Length: 260
Length: 158
Image (cartoon, rainbow over all chains, first blue to last red; front, side, top):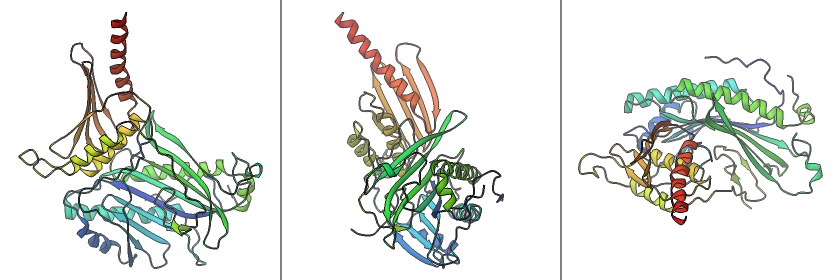
């Protein structure tokens, strides 16, 4: 597995990253139901000994020319939960439901919870979905049929009016703000996904004012295989780092110790 | 004010922040939204063997994808009639507009795997495409279908 960082990609010694999420959405294998979630947890239990249940996330598909995100939730009898499988350090988390699998890295309050870098998180995620696919093959005679991939970088930035390159907050007397913008992504003139930038003011757990800057790429991989997923998230990672570099100011880069 | 996870953004995050204000994403209301979602809901709830043989209900992911696809089309403010939505026997579905001699059919085989066709009963217009995420061509077809009607009305007034 290629785990080298591309040359010339901006790098920060002290990035404001709080969370990275790599995920896939897939078609539920025929014959699967919630009773099998325990067997899925068994695959990962050694590294993720704690389990919590949450409400399922809605299915999302990036479609064009407009995005279709009315988030209508259809019901077909019993609904499947989303399970959190949590690592001992609590820094790593798997989110699993019948049609989604996500790996979150989360910055914790412990001293040794520095960002381990994308390559490490990706390697864990890929090993996990390979393991999930092997389980689906053995139990349901079905590959993972991946229909959407997603990569999110969620930054918690100490509030400063000079963070962004494209807006100067010093000229705006505001106690709150929120913005979002999207960009369509194409390959060989074929639209496949969107870059989504969300930012807003929040308070962290210590009641300090922060800007939550969430950069996400979501879309359809070339085909439904794990190989296509790897290609999709590798390309998304490069694009997200480039966008982060472009959207944020040189002054902010100094704080985050940009090295290239 | 209560603590909640950062689901205000992508919904994938697990970390907690303290939001000062609730943030509401703008959503597009599109024509026939209620009719389409109720019809899809009906098709998801079909009994196994609804055709008297072994037909499956429409699958959850195909229905959700179809909803997204129709929203992508209708959110462009295109003017057209409500489509028929018919189930297939394999949990698939077909969306159809029939108007003014034209037919547009979108056969949703699986998410991002749509066989689209456009034809006219009287002339030689016939196109077939395999579509994945971008449904701009369907909008072009709908405009053509509706335009024929407008032209016919103008001609009858003259």
